[in-house]
Image (cartoon, rainbow, N blue to C red; front, side, top):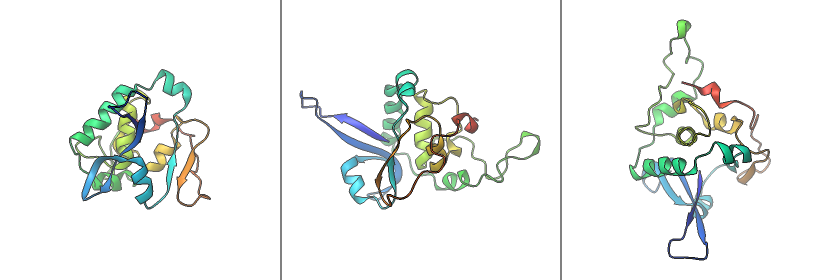
Length: 176
C-alpha cells in the first residue's frame, strides 16, 4: 500500500510517498514502512499500482481508519506469517462436507501478517469491502477484487505481464 505523507515542517504542501507492507526487509520479517522511491529501486519482482475505483474511494473508503490500522500494525512490528501465507494459497482442502473447514483453511488471525492479508484487512477496516476473511486472501485474489478503477499500472518488472481477471470478482467470496 502506498501512503502519501505530508512533510510536517513544510507549509507548501510537499509530501513523500511511503510503502507499508509485510515482507522481509532490512533484517526484519513483518510489517514495515519505507520510502517508496527506495523500495522501488531495490524490489526484485513485479510491481503494480491498482488505484481504487472513484465511487468506492468517495463513498466507502474511510482513509483515516485505513491509515490508522496499517500504521498500528507497523508500530507494533507485527511479524510475517509464513504458515498462513502458504495455507492461503492451498484452497483445495479448505472446505469439508457439512460446512466444516479443512486443514488448509486459515481462521482470521491478525497476530502476524502476510502481504495480501495486511492489505485485505486494511480494506475491511476502512469499509472498502464487507466482512472478509483476510487470512485467506492471496495477492492474485486481491488483484481480482472488483474495487479498482478500470486501469492498473505496471511499475516494475516484465512489462508484458498482465494481471489475469483483474478487477473481476466480488470480495464477498472471501467472507468469514
